[in-house]
Length: 220
Image 1 (cartoon, rainbow, N blue to C red):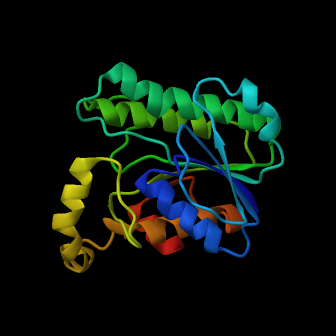
Image 2: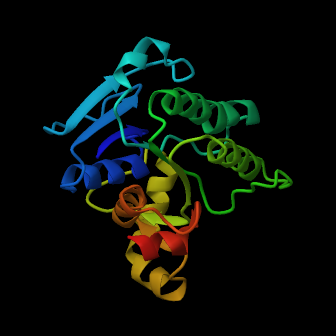
């Protein structure tokens, strides 16, 4: 498998990249983003690209891939709806439009979030925008498209979120993860489980195209 990762410097992307580099079935990984991950590995190639709404300058670099994992995202806290939609909807849809043209046999895996609303009726801005992005991606003619909706994600192996508020929350909640897992087993997962599940759906497929937290755990 040759895979592309968007958002490899974020918490979910870091976990996924780790699992890709460890998985013997993943032969090569291309990361695309504004900043490098800082990692060095024989499987890994990093491509710095500033304008994530226009991929024409790097189009020649994007052919011959089996999978794309889209992990790029931001918190909606303190973000205008216009900016949140640009990052959560416009960027993944633009990337997917380019990739499906170049790699129609690709599997596209996008990370959304628990509570995303694909009906477009939610009063919550982030839920509506995530649902809109899900619908657009699922409609594209890839070999397969999967949307992951994790709930609470516990970072492992030294992985940290780029959002300071989240890091503070994980510092408090982290020691309680075993209890949370026992009380709400379908709600909590880890960066390791999530990364492995994302790779697994590319390898083996899944029974549904939208996977909630409980589904993610059953796959990983």
